[in-house]
Image 1 (cartoon, rainbow, N blue to C red):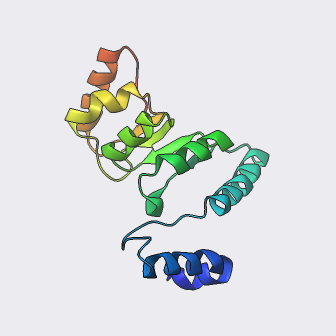
Image 2: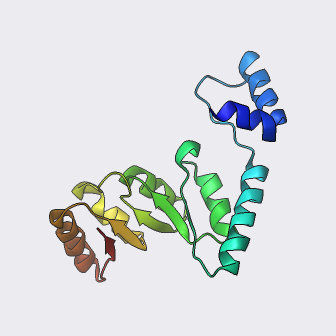
Length: 150
């Protein structure tokens, strides 16, 4: 599905990655990212968002938990990372990347709430009153009110 599009838009990346995989430079299941292309696309998105007065978060999804890409996107002006789970949120927070939304797909476990909330995400997604209460209690313990999205 993605290979056809990659060959149309960035054939050199595909050929380089294939060569590196064939000669053993890359192991299978390795991400190869054209950071210049990612940043060029990100700049275009931000320019349009700024024109429309829209605040953008980024979500790395297929790029994995890559703090280098996240840091560069933050430097460009994205408001923060959408972190689908606590582990991703902690990787981003440890790399100094602002957290936009946490818990988008997986609820933050109680054991990680303290560290995640210490990074002050803009908003956390909750799927239950119980999780909202847990987040509220931890945020109160840390001295602030955490915004949530149901």
